[in-house]
Amino acid sequence: MIFFFGTRASKIKERKIRRTTCSYCNSQDSFIIATFSKYFHFFWIPILPFSKTHIAECTHCKKTYAQNEFTHEMHAAIQKENETNPAKRPIWQGIGCIILILLFFIPFLISLFGAFFGNTSNDNNTTIKDVRYEYLKEDINSLSADLHPIQDSISFALKTCVDYDIESGIDTDQIKYFSKINEDKLLVLLEIRDMKKIKATERKVMIDVVEDCLTAMSNLEHINDYYIGVEGKWNTILVKTPTDEDLGGKFADKNKLLPFYGAKELETDLKSSNETFETTSDSINLD
Ligand SMILES: [Zn+2]
Image 1 (tube, rainbow, N blue to C red):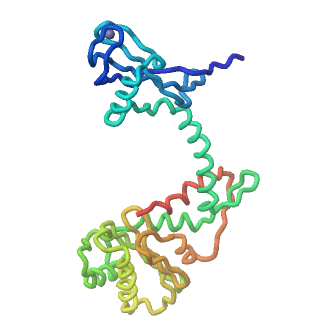
Image 2 (image 1 turned 30 degrees about the vertical axis):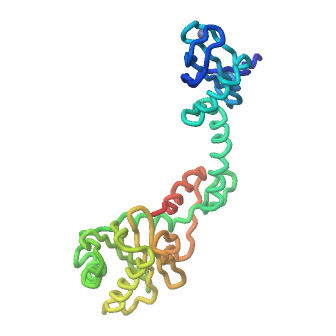
Image 3 (image 1 turned 180 degrees about the horizontal axis):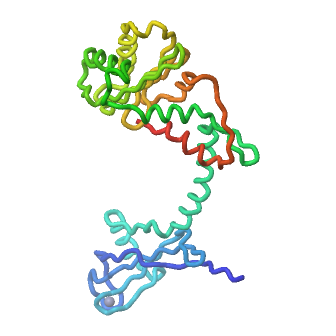
């Protein structure tokens, strides 16, 4: 097998230099300097640039000078020109190197990502999935701004109360709600897309407003535990449960709401771990 590798050069700049005299025809300021950049290539794919060289041509007598024939005056003129108009190497001369770095880092980053955010245990290509993720995903998808007073009475009453309590510039008509009861537990989800109007540190007030409204509702006396989640434009931004909370106002772990659905329910199926990775990765978008 023949490998094609070696060095090549390409012209990266042509510049006129001043305060020079051609030693052959005595013309003043007649030089054009062509700058070449050398790079290593592998199968003609540029890997890494390594040096630059200049060739001067007198535009008057057409004599060319290699870099080792340059006079002091010419060297000084190039240096001066470099200060204001440098000959930069184009990025494509290192494209092979960039590709190699990416090829090395992408699998590394993906595995790092999986180690931090993956929730799966992999055994003989069998993925064990906690079905509560699917329940929560479905409930988040059911968020609605168009609430029915009977079919969704808790959300409807909550909206009336929140609309009254909220004082910031948020457009309350755009807030979406979802609520669900599981024995003595209540899940309440809100989606507030223009949350940017409230400072991150003050956003947790929304949870207080919701809690106050829920406590005031007479038909919720049998509820002991509240699970409250607030979705922003891109991700979950606030979560509060009886045992846990994320109230920083920018990023909250919505999986903290999972205990609402009960203990971990496992479903075993023969899917690749990538699929589960996708379903869990949507909780890591940043606001
Ligand atoms: Zn000349």
